Image (cartoon, rainbow, N blue to C red; front, side, top):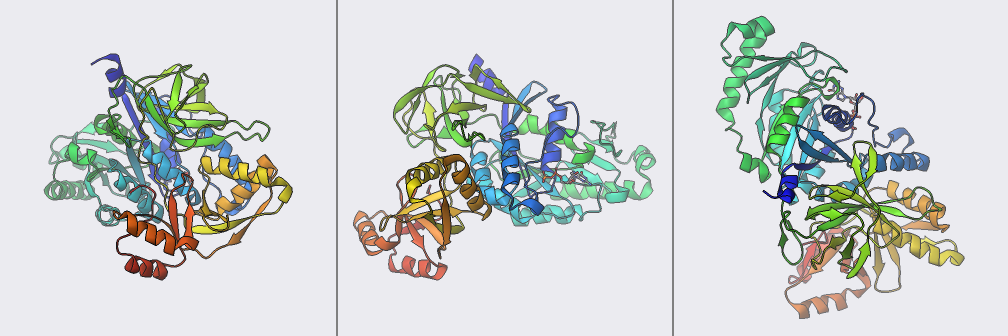
Length: 527
Ligand code: GDP
């Protein structure tokens, strides 16, 4: 192994996905504590937008401040360099989460044992499935009276369409919660509620028939555990690492994040089985991480909070080679080289200047408006990385300029906010109407506020009756032209200039699909 390959094999880049309140922030904090990256609980701030104040832009700005600090948290554990990418908690910013998931190699999914699989988790899992991202599941809050563990496992398999393989098993729950049994190392961990203590004491019990078990758990729970383990070993086949790596099977851990219980078991397994940075596809070819030449892509852009300094930080995921600060790299979209003398790495909660970085790492590049989400940077590679699709928004509104003197500012502000990925802009071919599409209404407030605050532009949003933005394609060029001609009034361009059919209703889209069988319609930009 050369130096580059050594660095690659040490890296694990992942994200935590969860429905709000399941325990993502708490688990993040415990992982950082294990990694020695922070030394006290309470140091990690939640990036949740408080529902009570969610229409308040001050709150949004505050969260934006937190989110830059927690975007990427790097830490080391047992000689492995772990990069944990944070995802926004609020569902109105789901698109941001989708994009972050394109920059990770695996995910940990947190599920609340009282609530089971919730709606946001289902959506996020769909995104993981698109890329066959490996998933480890952490069922949290076992110190509460939750649902039956077998039910929870069934629900995960059913709702998330993934097979499960428990690697720890809970003993009791809520008030009777006694601990977990590690099915892999055959080790019993006894629970003690503690927000400070980091590791639970383990008792090795290789043979479950040993009387030792009864002494520790009492007769009823000991018998129950024997029965459970027999059942599990009978029902679930051994964990096949390859099946985990291809996203077919999710290993499952039970625990209580707030009590640091069961977390270490998961982390130890995680560094053992989770994937190191993998090869990735550009439009032209597959790029291996151990190729000499640097490549990477921008998956997130964060604007300066101070409107006087309109600079931004672009977050770049390194895919191959070695990134070196001060080098000039090609921005493939512009076919132009830029020098990046200011680069930041993210360690736990601190930013520090970084001179070099390797595949799997995330660097923050200082940018004055040349970079946008999806851009590929390289040392000569000409293909753009695939895998950062736009999804059709849910809500559409037309932009109405309220200050004709500030038209330029409005255009510039909109372009820059769209480069950041705050929302999507569609420009109709006819009549130059501009439409902003979002996942949740909160995004309109953010746009309005930031246009005013940072660009001095005023706009309003007029509701529009649109169902979906559909990207479309056809093998038959003539049919495609015919379709465009016939539906010209309903065709707009997206940020990359691709044509999009703006469907007004579901039934109308269905009709159009029937009338134009040669045209394929897609709810996302990459197909
Ligand atoms: P997030 O929205 O997913 O980031 O959730 P948080 O980590 O902020 O947790 C939501 C709430 O659940 C907080 O009040 C936590 O203290 C609580 N919580 C997290 N883990 C546990 C746990 O293991 N047991 C119990 N009882 N509560 C927990």
